[in-house]
Amino acid sequence: MRVPVLVPVLGLGLRVGLKVGLGLGFGLGCVAGCGTERAVGPPSPVTSARPRVTVAPCVLKVADPRAGRAARTRLLRDLDRYLAGRPGRVVFGAHDLVTGVRLGRGAHDGGIITASGAKVDILARLLLLRRTGLRAGERELASRMIRESDNAAADTLWWRVGAGGGMSDFYRRAAMRETTPGPSRFWGGTTTSPADRIRLLTVLVRGGAGMSAGDRRLVLDLMSRVRPEQAWGVSAAARPGDRVAVKNGWTPRPFVRNTWAVTSYGRITGPGRDLLLSVQTDQQAGEGQGIQTIEGLARLIGTRLDGLAPVRSRPCAARPTA
Image 1 (cartoon, rainbow, N blue to C red):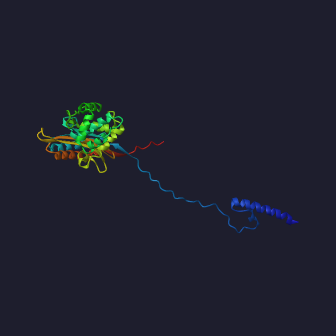
Image 2 (image 1 turned 180 degrees about the vertical axis):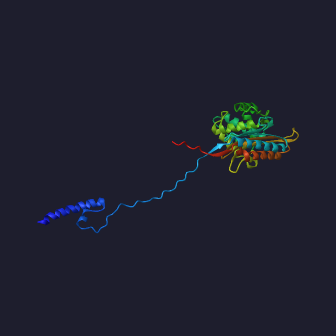
Image 3 (image 1 turned 135 degrees about the horizontal axis):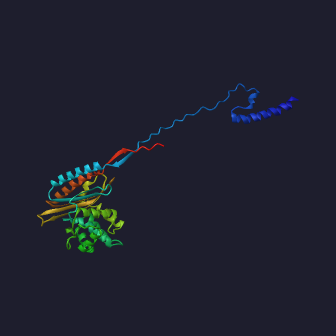
């Protein structure tokens, strides 16, 4: 009579033991004589190696005006010494659009002819007149005038822009008050100042005088692709990897004691630099002498310009604790 009673009870115990055993790690079946099995304890904690995080110290870069003023004084002294040893008259102006640094000696002297430097002016005036684009053949003339310094191309375009009268209008619009166009057909007799060359470059870089962005890019592109033999001058201020857009002028002056006028202006860009530089000389014994003077001055400026806007490092201020 016990068998019918024990079987269902045992079956119930097994079923309960299985269910509970799945959740607890042991079953009721052990009551029936499984005492030799080990009880399973809680799992051992797992130790995970966390990467060490290093926090870089907070450092601020701040301007150092005192060091900048000292560097500027030293550079101007050395430039004066250099120019004192060079023949003829030499004037220059410089403006870095990134740092705001300006330098100059005789920058507002407008009595030196720019010679072929005036060809950029002619092209700028032409582009203002051709709002819908240059006419047939004019783009080729413009390229030859800037990249090759072709005088015949300049002669043709000089008349198309209205000669001296047309150029005077452009100079008024560009606020180039120290520039006077050459008389009659003599565009090369245009006189200008380093400060006005900087103004012209600023118009080409940042806009103004009604010039469109596309026209300004065209002029600067041509200036950046002058023939290698004409890429001398202020380009000597460039560091390795800098980009240069330049226009030079050179002409004998038989009626001024058989001397030469040699000029150069342009834009030098690179990391942390957007330098506009103009150097003008006259009363030079020859073209080569003028080029040597310009490049020596440009090199001095180019290698030491960064020191005029120095920065120093200091730790960040500590945050107040709550």
